[in-house]
Length: 131
Image (cartoon, rainbow, N blue to C red; front, top):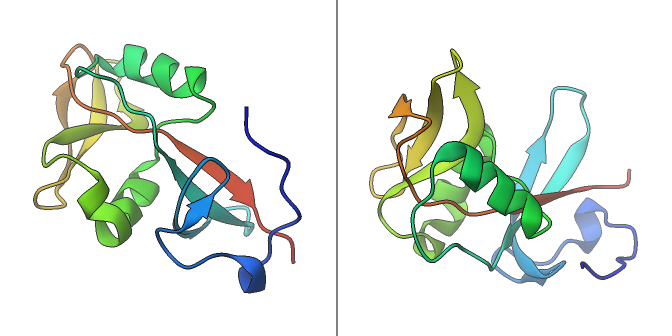
C-alpha cells in the first residue's frame, strides 16, 4: 500500500530518479484532459517475462499499471538505466490481438507482438499534481 502523500505540485516534486510514493520519480506527463501527473516507476518487477494480459494483471497487483506509450517513451528518456535492454509491455493494445511494446535498448516502439508473446514489464503509478 502506498503512503499518504502531501499534495504534490511542480515546485514540490523531487529530482528525477529520487524516491517518491514507494518508487522512483521518473518525470511529468500531461494527459489529454490537460491535467499533469507525476510518473512513479515502481521498484517491483516480475522474475520472468509475461504475456500481455498477465502483465496487466501483475501491474495492478503491485498497485500500479503498465505505462502508456507516451509514458514508456519518457521512461526510456529519463530512466533507461532502470530497465533491462529487452521488450517491455505498454498498456496499449491494437486490434484485439497485438499490444504495443517499448524496446529499452534503442527506444523503438512496436505493435508487432501478439498479446500471447512474453515480454518484460514494469509498473508505474500516476499521481495528479495540484495546481
